[in-house]
Every structure is written in structure tokens, then in C-alpha cells.
Length: 132
View 1 (tube, rainbow, N blue to C red):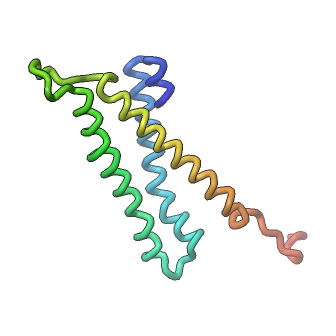
View 2: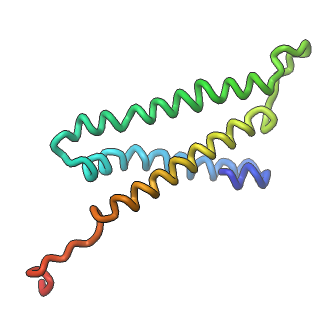
View 3: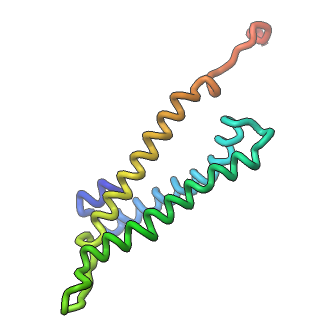
């Protein structure tokens, strides 16, 4: 999506990018239970899964309820007499870039987690099962 924003691509390309982002967002919801069970075990799965979800709520509140209206208000000129408001990248470009930076931090965190838990997913070969 960042490339679409930077290049000023067409609406169709932006819609395709939004579809890819939506697919990735859906995959996160599918993977959270699996990752929680793999990393923390199944004994206390319910508790551990419940502890993973507040980060989603916190991110939603931070980016959509606090960040976007604050940036829009700063760029819309609410104190102006014309009251035209603001639209397009002039108002929402900074919000988009900050959200993209947050996504990059999340991707980096996921990469660090994958590197630190690589041993969980490494193939295990039993000495007696080699010939099977």
C-alpha cells in the first residue's frame, strides 16, 4: 500500500492493494490461536489467547480513534472561517504513513519472534525413524 501511495497509482491499484491488506489482516486472526498454542502450550490456551487480544484492541483505539482524528483536525483548519475542511492525502497522508510505520514495526516484531522460536519448527529426526 505504501508503494501505491507514493506512486499516485490508479483507484483500481489502490483497491487491489486494499484487498491484499484485508487478506493479510484476516490471516492474522487465523494465525493468532495457532501461534498462541505453539508458543505457550495447550494447557492454559484460553488464558494465553485472551492475553494476545488486547494488543489488537489497543492498536485499533490508537490508530483509528486517536491518531486519525487528531491528524485530521490538525490539517483541516477547524479554526478557519471558510469551514471547507480537508480531503485526500493532504489530510490523511500523515495518518497513512504513521500507520504504515506501525505495520513495519509489527512485521519486524514478527520476524524477531520467528527467529527466536525457530527451534520449535525445525524438523526433528528420530534416530530410529530414519529408515521409515
